[in-house]
Length: 41
Image 1 (cartoon, one colour):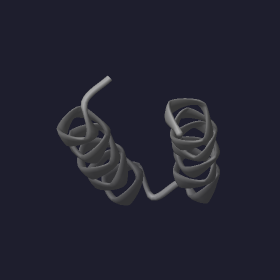
Image 2 (tube, helix red, strand yellow):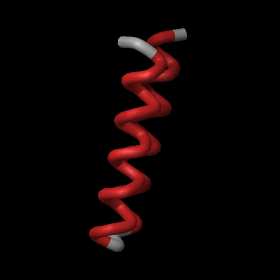
Image 3 (spheres, rainbow, N blue to C red):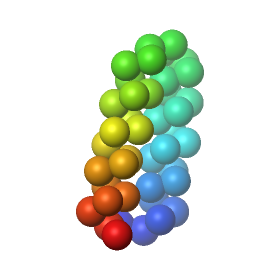
């Protein structure tokens, strides 16, 4: 996965979390990104 794709996913996820207003959604996205970042590295 390209770093650009991860950034895009993060941006879309952040926008979605803000739109929904659900903290759990943002937390879940951050956890998934953290796991992906760990796997990539």
